[in-house]
Length: 530
Image (cartoon, rainbow, N blue to C red; front, side, top):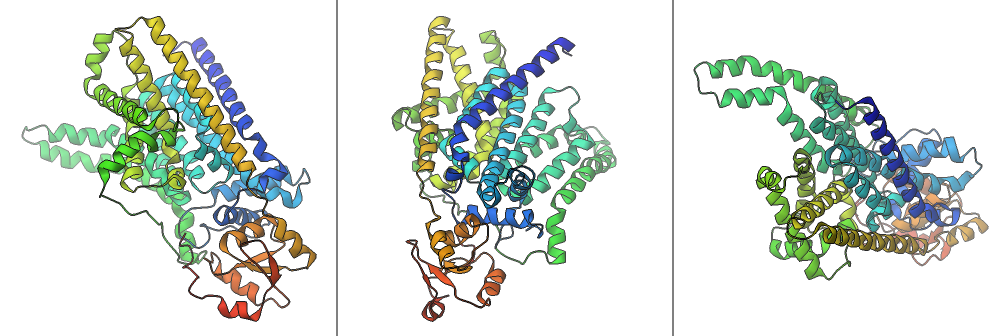
């Protein structure tokens, strides 16, 4: 055990580091929190989160799932509604509070996750690695900045997955970890059920942590002990002991899962939501794996961590291959390396954990051939990827210091850190500047207000975005595009009085009988197929 003074100093250091990380996080994203900036960049999917938040804010209940599908829960909308009611409404923002509250909700979830991932990484790899990874996430990769400003679901799994990671780090570094006890098993089940409801990309963290809990559990260790014991009576001992141990492990775990996922089951039984689309998983593409693997090493993996363009792709591919070989070397020969270097190795239990998280994300990345717009689904794996990269750089520096003077290695490492930091900062500024240049979509709302329309028709993105930005003063029916709430659209069609049509170019005109006749034609896609 550490002396009380050391615990106090460690807590102070962690608090100061978290404060610095959050300050950098807010500083990068602050230009996105003005009234003018908060209305830019929304599309149909992100705007639906705002409409779900509006429903909660107005006290009209909550949606179990994202409109038109049977997955992705309402954590972000609920948080946005709470921020708007408790902070923005008293400040007198009125209708302008909708976009800002949703943006603050997404940023809050990402910031929460960064803090808990930081604490977990501190336990596993020490202060330097954790602080570097935390500041890296504060400055983004670009996709990470966009996810925090325009929440689309993975921000929920990032926040919940960070708690799982923190608990797993404690299990690997604490003498009597919470995750080894029944309360920890219940917490694991609760986070699993809640996370699976909110956003299923939590699986990148959930599976490795669940495997860790299983391998550390008493019944599993007893199973291995008895299975390798060839003495007579071993099978009888296994059968007599195993069921009790497995019951003690499974009971709190299943209770947590049931509690975390109970709103979904209750909603299905009570008719809170209609049967709709399940998760749309991109198809697995087994052909062309070698070419995609090479592309992954040279561009995709570096884009994920925000360093694409730091060097030519062949150099980055070679660096990624070297890091991969070093990782395998550390896993295979870690005790021998530790003795030969005469230094402490990284926490290899932690290295196994982050390696499993990164491997699951990397496999999905190139086996499903995700494009750049889908990289946000891997957000829960980002902290593990950054930690793994930083650990491998540190280990490579230690290896070099055996052959090269330590001063030169430190100078090279400092230059690399400075170059990467400046590159990330330029990337962050460019990403925020691009987001601020998104067009202002509110121009049609002025015409709609002048002509006193309350119901209009428009394409998917235009319809839900303008309904969100108008704070539902104007409600929209999707036209020749997916309809996420058909019951509401049917109700709106029956409202008497003139209605309007907003074209994709932003032109507002009166809704004509010919438009109604053409509605639902071949251009309409199945609801939710986006």
